[in-house]
Image 1 (cartoon, rainbow, N blue to C red):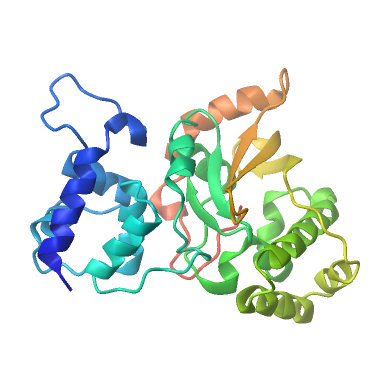
Image 2 (image 1 turned 120 degrees about the horizontal axis):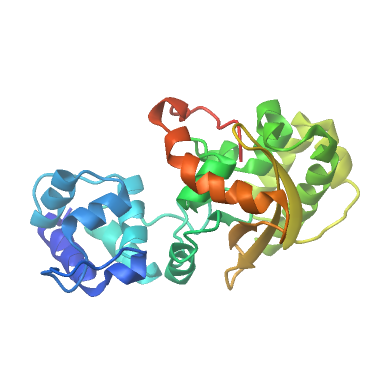
Length: 292
């Protein structure tokens, strides 16, 4: 592990990023051209002291999860992300799963959607990053990895995952998720992780097996969703997806139909979101979130 070089690399990446690029405001008395160390720490979910020690090349040994968070905070491209992992003597993550690297262009767009619930997910419906409003509307992702990180997997194996939508809508969402998953499996060349997930789901859910056997396929580009929110009640929104070039990631955002009650509900969401999502509402590590 080359800690001094790791620290130097973090400093150079921090210096090239402007606050506006990551959705931060620029104060009148700013002394550095790029981000401050406390800003990078906040964006990565680390303490300021921890990040300072990283840049100083001290004895801190960052985990793969922290390295991924730093790569997102500093808007690293794939080559830079891999270099960061190798400096920390860790294998760069695969291109799929919860540890997948989010493309900087998609993060830059997400940063600008501060008045709209938005999140970046994989084509297996694994949540990679959310803005504040998306977390308030849909709930945080589970603290899990592997198949359980996929909302498709939880939809057919965990009844609590369905609580986010009215029961009358469940058959529709089941069909749409299966059709979208079939497209993802083909896109990934029927690789081992996705085919293994299909095999598990066929064994665990008769509903999934019946839908899979229809052979129907359709990429989920947009939909009308009724979301059940604990404080706001039923929120009727449009859900749209913007796709990465390889189709493996999508920026998903939620808007209110003009003139609908959801216009006011989403406005209120921005007010109550922070108060609702206190630490006591977050799932324990390894647990599942009741909402998606």
